[in-house]
Length: 187
Ligand SMILES: [Fe+2]
Image (cartoon, rainbow, N blue to C red; front, side, top):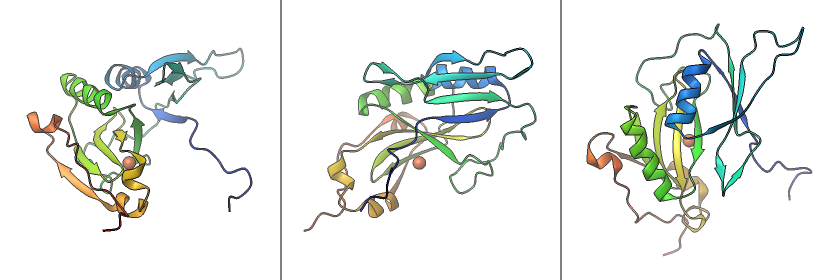
């Protein structure tokens, strides 16, 4: 039974960032979000505050914001060590960005590489195929496309625990398998 007023999901995310121009460049040029707004300072309030709002493309529709950035010069410097979901010392482990389909995701991976961004990790999970990179603050960013519901809904926990590590360099880093395991299927 559902509890009253069960949430549908996450509406938007606001990140504190060291340098809003560097983060703007990452989230627009590397990831592909579009800036849709900016906080206007008002006299006596929000002085010195820099905040910008961004949207993805949701079937041709713009959201009021999926993501916002707030500049915070006092943030600790980014963790430059090896990134991994269990090695990261950042308060933000990773943010997963959904692409509409496999083709869009593959096109974005190629673009990300053309931009000279390091592929930290590529993984086939049981419910998504994923690329992990880092933003200028050291926050992990996972680019994903969802596998069809029929693949993972039979046993979500098994799909979550499934990890196939893939190459991060060379032509293989841009290859994606179409045959995927199905979870919770009776044989
Ligand atoms: Fe994730």
